[in-house]
Length: 274
Ligand code: URA
Image (cartoon, rainbow, N blue to C red; front, side, top):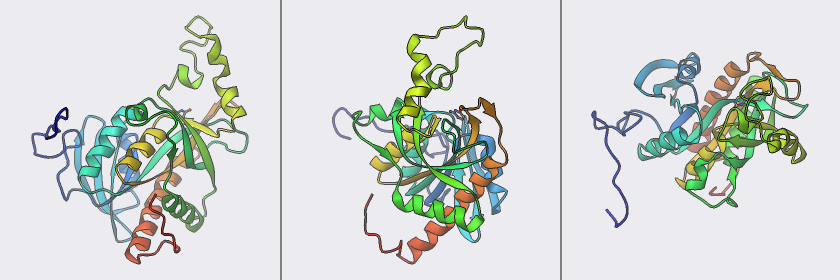
């Protein structure tokens, strides 16, 4: 071990510390829902489903989708718990990960239940600042984006691309006062959070994608995300409209496509290493 570096702790089952997974427990392609409950929703479309580990916010389920080995691990909410999941999955050999999440849209052309495939993120997540300077971009792997698009096309799902704002806060940082009667902390700049993002043509807001893209990229992983719109901040409405289920299925289908492209050693002639 080099000077000024610490070794990683091990779990009591000799697995990675937080996820409690051991080598061989998951394949190289993993989906990343935030909520532990969503792992089971994702696995409704799989065969040979097995719950592999469950500890704190991290629940891992493995199985196969149309014959392709696949797993999903919940990351919890926000950047710090995502960083832990991605780091530990990387040590287990995972090279491709797709976040399956929810988001709030702040533009008129998306509505409840729509699917957003983020291309890049504004990094207000907090966690990625522990890794890189503020100017460093958070962006999706283009081949994973291509697979997500192909998946949505195969399944006939409506989708669009996103410039996603990842916030380290759900309430104030996303323009939600603690109380609605004007009695709670509300600095003057909070009024401008959403309008300023709209000026910058940001499409949606959530809490995990930027941190995941940066940490995954630095670990040489292919990262992508598909987000279902659960809140409409233009019309101040909440609702799922079946979007979560569509995002889960599209992400599994994208993994199948990536697996196929990888086994054919072809991704449309692309030689980029991003
Ligand atoms: N997730 C968020 O962080 N914000 C929303 O508005 C919806 C989902």
